[in-house]
Image (cartoon, rainbow, N blue to C red):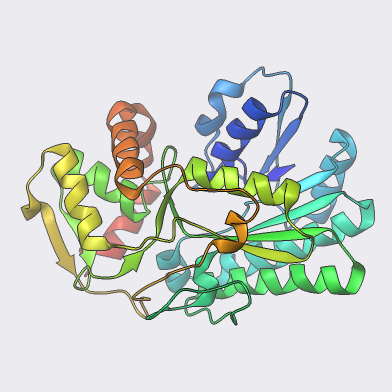
Length: 331
């Protein structure tokens, strides 16, 4: 069962699993919030090994019913509120879904004695890393409501391992880019704005550093930890290379043949972490390597959005327009 499987990373992971493992059956369990989109899975309609259930991971009975009906043996949990900016506006949904929802899933794993539970987390749980790189044994120091909710979920996962012996693993992924990412996130926001010659709203001075990895590299890493990771362990998952946001914006404009004058500096968000950096030696010891450089990943991502306007244009209306107005136009 892939919770949150209609979202960005989740839908890519579902496609990856079905292609790689011809004997696997995959159930997507998704609430279909604004960022969950069945269009991400439209090509799987009618697939004999794919099933979909609309449900909320906070609904314990719905979770149990799905596990019973589809004879689930493994859960990979992508279901989460994930956007830092939204968590700053309203943290409530983040606490409910990211923490309470994870608790509900862990209780189900315990009740049904499932074979494995994998928690998809984030490098943001480490907080701001101004020097060096975070290793898995470093303390968690989240600085946004989103990061705090993911750290809280991780603590629950680890507690259920220690207390009940549940077979759990965790990956802490860096920023993902690639197909099907909702255009509130910075890379698809900048790409789609640039296509339409709209400003690219860049926070602060644009020198914040992020590790941008291609989503399918992330999916491969999750797969390796799911099958070969040690229960109770967390694994960092990224390229290990940081890129400044202003350099990311400039490369997008260069790839699209647009002028740098489209970059518009706006007031920084509260508590904006200047840098994330993770050491990925632990997962590399399992045989994983990132297949894409940042430049290759961004070029593939830009090309996908150029070729799939029918996917993202409908998303940049309605609720999105109101969010964009509050988030950027008032800065």
